[in-house]
Image (cartoon, rainbow over all chains, first blue to last red):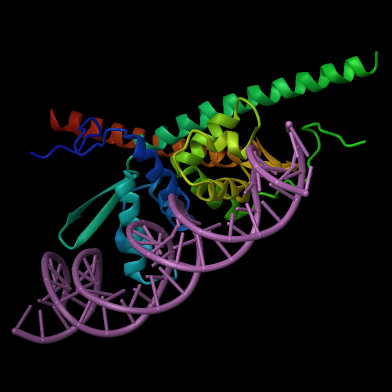
Length: 125
Length: 125
DNA sequence: GTTATATTTAGGGATTGCCCTAAGTATCTG
DNA sequence: CAGATACTTAGGGCAATCCCTAAATATAAC
């Protein structure tokens, strides 16, 4: 009996250094981001996903392949229909990087602010 | 009297739909991400930034240009030295997208979990 | 079994990304 | 002003992206 639970970790990739590159690149295209948004409500087939786009099917499918290579989605084929669904782990990877980075940036800019504040104080003394 | 404060908003870009593409693409290269990390401690010149990399200078400078096109950094040239510094706004853009997305994904997966849970219950009755 | 449906494969064209070397320009230093 | 320093410009190669059309394959439906 085949299981379908999320607790099953088949095919999950180990977060390589290079993996984050692929996730960012996958996210750099509006079509692919829209597909991900679409998939956040429910899994969908290739043609369902392709319908809104004025693009030849093979071109569109290439986007799906890229999303799958990046690990952001997974697909299974049943009969003649391939269904795609989300895989949220990689997103956390890049979110972590961004969060970490933003904290550092803000700290740095706060330092700059207090430096400028101090300058201003000393200036007016 | 030239101001230096962060409160000055010169050259800030309006968040276009296409801007987020550029930011994600800029972040998709490890060299560029490292540069950003490096810049989170302090501004730096081209050669300071290039030093750690085993790469011809013109190649490296191309990365810097891409970072600047994306809006993630800004540069000014004084004498023969060009200095780069961070520009945190664009990062928030992509962080927002990711945060929004992750919430949707998690909701979706929670729904899946409760669905599977229900299936299991009904199965064992 | 023929026809419609859902992809997939094959191949090609334009643009961009990511690297290089070689030679320039502009500025600083002695 | 001569030489060192800090980039900048010019040009080229190779691979990947992002789009296309035409034709194949595999399943489903009548």
